[in-house]
Length: 189
Image 1: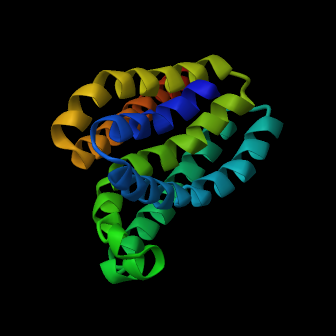
Image 2: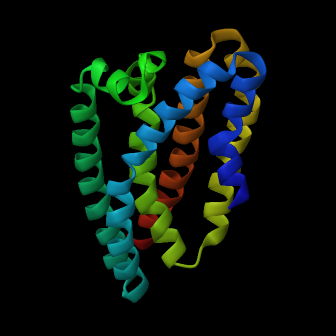
Image 3: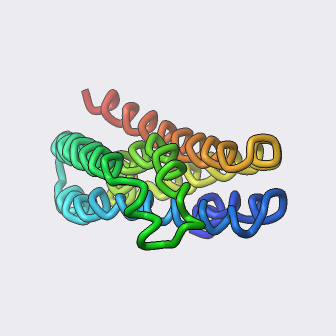
């Protein structure tokens, strides 16, 4: 969805506009590395999606989604802890001295990354159920949060503001999905 892409990258435009291209490079690398952790949840989501798609019993689909969401939480939290213990010098060796702050900003992005990892499974549940409206609205929620906060937090707080914007967009869109999934659970009980 184009709205989701814009949501994930709009803060880059604001950083370039109000801060600098150098800082945008540092932030961009931090975001790319943090988003690479999603490979865990996306891999599990493929398996979970096919299970939900082929399951006729909604209760079993919900149970499957909960099982994979818990596993995703554990794997993603473990991956984030692993990254937290990687020395800062590792990143400067790979990207150069200008990128010495990559780990710093990467760690500030952890909350949103964890939320999205979990909501990836829930999003695939809704996709398998054919409920694309919830996914569209989730993207819109994140986009609105990004728009509302970017022009205030990024010029005011720099890259810290950008981290807050990204986290708030990720968390709010994830909470939206979790809320709708909780309603699905309630309807099936």
